[in-house]
Image 1: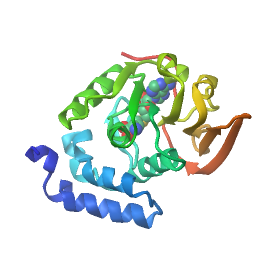
Image 2: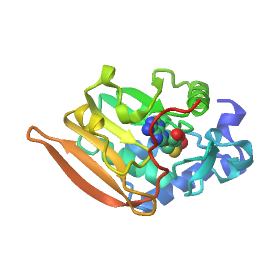
Image 3: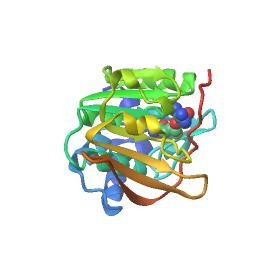
Image 4: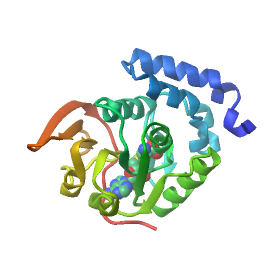
Length: 220
Ligand code: SAH
């Protein structure tokens, strides 16, 4: 592993392990999720000036008015996605810096990721390549449309909060599939897990959260 990937001091494996103990204390129990996060250097997804803060339990700016999700929320959403069994075909909406993408790529079958801001998507793709993650399908698009060509998905995870769940995402969910998504306006969002059953949809409200808004259209 290169020195940059390996990290030193505040970006070392030890710092990362402290982050993992904190996640355990916060109630994360899925050992595959914890192992994937222990294995993935988070500091390479943020600007050099912020590297030393990459393992704090906080969201950090990644440019274009967007943030890298805090470690707890990445762990929690991934755990919710995987709880009912392995996922073979997953769609992520809001690639951002690609950190959540890297964690998912290690834990699911095929992963597709959609981002509406072109430079973020390009940078995320480069960072993942550096980590040897090369099988993720990327698309510069409004995730409100899902990705019909690769549907149905047995998992969909959204990293931005729409006021209401976009219908296309429900349509593109397989029976038995789960959609993990923050829903609501700024300041009053809740994380939902929606499971498609033979008869319709089951909606669980998990907890209050803070996400950037889910915006429509694309930006270059
Ligand atoms: N998991 C990412 C989260 C980034 S913030 C990370 O940890 O870096 C959420 C991202 O969702 C932003 O990059 C934002 O541009 C993107 N986003 C917001 N609305 C979107 C939409 N409709 N389609 C695709 N991406 C969207």
